[in-house]
Length: 129
Image (cartoon, one colour):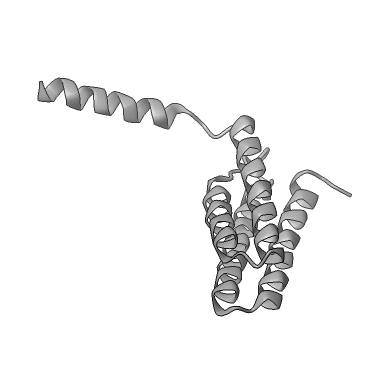
């Protein structure tokens, strides 16, 4: 019985590892990040700390999942996206500190910095002009 359970567990791990992060996953994560940003903004505007903190948690969780596959050896888009993702989490943490301290202007400033990271990444990766 233990061997069967162990085999099923191993099979489940292999199947989950085979599923690669693809365009569908990226779209889902981007939509989640957009929704989280809207939630954070709404929380700041309505002075709703709980809404802001929930948005931050969602934003940080979604931004950790985002992956970009390089198109060639000289394509550094994946490194850039990873750095932008790290910056998003850094500024999200600052929003959290600001909101917990009651500094709405500081939270709004760091919200704008998160948005700047998003736009910067979209400019480079999606070739926005």
